[in-house]
Image 1: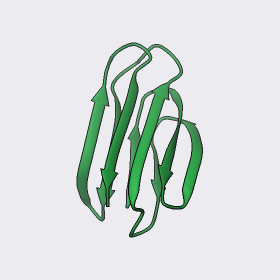
Image 2 (image 1 turned 45 degrees about the horizontal axis):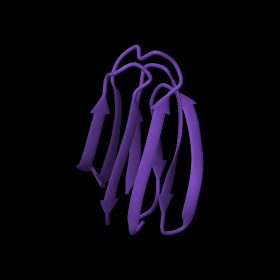
Image 3 (image 1 turned 90 degrees about the vertical axis):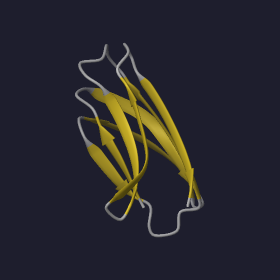
Image 4 (image 1 turned 45 degrees about the vertical axis):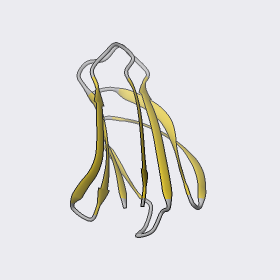
Length: 84
């Protein structure tokens, strides 16, 4: 299972799954591999500046998108959850 983040600016947040929680931050696009059986996954990401485009978070199982959320507001926040 992979978390995929698409952003045009800096962002920060965290994800939680069966092996614990991790703080994440970056600029632009990023992805995080949680392995084949991550259990319950929750991801929260917020852009740190006024939005320069949509913030999108996706959960993928292999190449298949199983959950996706997009927010285009100022300082967008996206929270996404899925049980694998």
